Every structure is written in C-alpha cells, then in structure tokens.
Length: 319
Ligand SMILES: Nc1ncnc2c1ncn2[C@@H]1O[C@H](COP(=O)(O)OP(=O)(O)OP(=O)(O)O)[C@@H](O)[C@H]1O
View: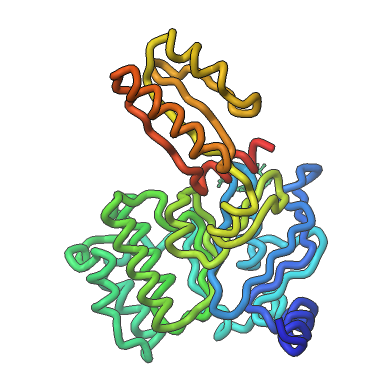
C-alpha cells in the first residue's frame, strides 16, 4: 500500500464523514442487559456489509440505532458524517429501510403505495421495472392489509429500493420469501446496486444471502463483533477442517484407525464414518482410503466436504 493510501485510510478511520456509516465503540444496554458491547463497524461509500449472528446477538439493535429508533448508551454513530437524530427529512428520505416491525399503510392498495413512492421520488424512472422484478405486478389492486407475509416483504423491499437511496438498512429482508422470490429480490438489489452504488447493511440468517449481496461480513454474538472480512478472508482466517465421509465394514475401519494421525479423529454418524482433518492431511487420507477400496474390491462411497462459510460461522459462534 502506498504512503498516500495509508494516510487516506488513517484519515478515513478517524473522520466519520469519510464513511457512509461509522459505528465507533458503540454499546447499548437495556436495563442491565448488554445488547451491544463496544461495537465498531465502518461502512465505506458504496460498500454493503452483512451482519450474521444467532437470535438475540444484537443485529436489530444495531440497525435500530442506525435508524435513530434507539439511542446508544455510549459510543459514536454517524451516517454521512451526521448523528442519525440530526439528519434532515431529505437525508432521511435517502435511506431505504426494511424492518421486521415496520408497518406499511394497510388501507392502501399496492398500486396506490407504488404511486405514492413515484410522487415522492419523481426522478426515478423505473417504477414499473422494479414492480415487475419484485413480482408485484399482479397485486397492484390488492389492499396491503390482505397481502401474505412474503408479498408484504416484497412490497417493503420496493419501498426501500425505490428512489434515490444512498443507504439501505435491511433487517432480514427475505426471511418470509420462497426460494424463487428470494433470488428475484437478490437480482433486484444487485441491479440497483450497479445503477446507484448505494451503501448498505443487511442483517440476515442466510449465509448465501450474505455471500451474494455483501462486500464484507461481520459475525456478531452476544453484542460483540467476533470476526469480519469478505467470504474468502473468513474462510482463510479460520482454518476449518475438511470432512471425509465413507461407509466401510468394521474390520476395515479398525485397520484404517491404526494409520490415522492423532489429530484426525474418526467418528461414526449413523451408517457413515467420518474423519475430520486439517487441509494438509486430506490428500494423504483420501489416497489411503481409495487404496483400501481398490485392494479390497469394495465400494466405500467416499464423500469429501470442504469447509463452508456456515462451518466458519458455527465454529466462531461456538467459541
Ligand atoms: N426493547 C428491548 N428491551 C429489552 N431488551 C431488548 C430490547 N430489544 C432487544 N432486547 C434484547 O437485546 C438483545 C439483542 O436483541 P436484538 O433484537 O438486537 O437481537 P437480534 O440479533 O436482532 O436477534 P434475532 O436474530 O432474533 O432477530 C436480546 O437479548 C434481546 O432480548
């Protein structure tokens, strides 16, 4: 990295206005419950981050602070260089939100709400395109109060994406969606991202969603950030183990056990045996099993599984 880049990074880390969102050393207490514990998350302009963590980890609390619905107990929060409470209506209008508890006006029809958004954001030319992409075209005359949970969620995503948005704050935006609708929403988000280059923060329980949509992923647990990076970095930082699964008669398993390294345990899962090993051990062990298969004329149904982001997550959260 050049000295100029290093200097710019240093300045950016200490000047919140250089980030779209700066969460610096933020804690939040509900009574004596610590929901966020000295959390620092900086989101660059045009960057979308993912928040992954178990139920009660603090994801919604972080998003609610960002939205100005909660005040932090300590620490600094800024959006485009300002405290959330000090944003003017115009600046607020450039934040697209999907919240679990955010209700749309149930007495309007879908079409009326979309028209209202067109009126609020007259410069956005693509109302019809977004309606079609999000699978809302056949629902325009339906009252919002009569929509299913997934249909309501797709309409909330329309409301978040439509208009000149600079920041998206999405809390489990596809939790109620079927597989096809979820992918349609991802496509719509990625397309708008290409066109608008907004920043964003997405809390989700879907690893695949985080990998598809986010430039960087934060694992949060018990109010603390445990790990962050892009998917590749997270996999590399955390040396996860490879699993080698096979079926074999007991005598062969006993034979194999004698040649296994002490740190590559063999366990039985139903009918399947599994060896969990470090990546540098995998090739040798696979070779040994294939040799046993060949010399004994057996079919051992060997399956090798590389660690996934979900494995990293589970192991980070378990620790
Ligand atoms: N208004 C509140 N009053 C008291 N405690 C709260 C309040 N809101 C959240 N909490 C607590 O703070 C912690 C963090 O909750 P939060 O809703 O931020 O978790 P989350 O990561 O979004 O969980 P989930 O994945 O289940 O949505 C939890 O222990 C929760 O019980």
